Image (cartoon, helix red, strand yellow):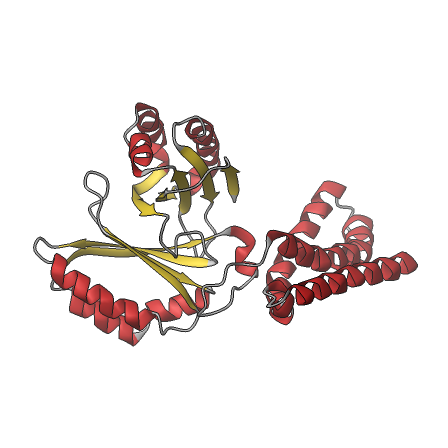
Amino acid sequence: MNVMERPASTNVTIVTQTRVRAEAFEPFATWQDETSAIIAKFPGFIQQTVMPPSPPAQADWVILQRFTSSDAALGWLKSEARLKRIEGAAPMLLGTDDIHIVNDSGGGVLPAPVSAVISTRIKPGGEAAYRAWEMRIAAAQSRAPGFQGYRFEPPVPGVQDDWLAILRFDTEANLERWLASPERQKLLEEASAFTEEFHARIARTGFDQWFPTTANTGAPPPAAWKQNMLVLLLLYPIVFLFGSLVQAPVLIGLFGLPFAIALFIGNTVSVLLLSVLVPRASERLAWWLQPSHRVIEIAGTILVVALYAAMLLAFWWLS
């Protein structure tokens, strides 16, 4: 995930979801970096977050662009600089972009551990029926396990014709369970009378998925410094043990692989193991990651530092 930021208050976020051809991943990444440099100089720009695809859960690139006002956001969307960039990207894309403007003053704005961005186009004259239906489905999904938040945005004339809903859940499994639930399917059938077009896309945010937030409360992810401390707590023994027991004696010594290739294999194994171990460790240490009191936070930090020291002594002795 690539983030650049200027210190300022936020008002509006442009949520763009785009699907890129498999063979164009690297060229599009370069195109996105170049576009990021241009938007950084645009009046009213505050922050951009770029989330590359994370298959199979997230097949799209998700770009969040925050501006000081809706006028500034619309100015960027309609700017000659952006339109020229879009022309250059067209051959790399599958289909068209989904672009939505979200007011940041409400709750539930992206990013979240896992979110679904749902666009609905209503048949002419069906707005009142849709609003009443939306209230029913909002009440139903709020009871779904792992539900963390919800945003509902009306169309923006000249920018987006769709009604936009953003659902936030603590895990992909809980989100998928709700999306496929019989209760939701029944509600979607009821909406067919006034719905012209409907589709949903899932968005993730990098390693935040490793740290589940408090279910049904909308609590934010743990502080970044705690996430870093926990990842280091698990990464250090993985790297040490894999390097000592597998990388050096087997990959390099037995199979004669170059150090660069052996290191790449070790890093791949580390990431795969962390994706399994960090969520489990975060559940065990939830009392520290989401503390109810300052004393608990301090005690948890001391415990993690003590574990660092114990590992250092143990591995020092083993080496």
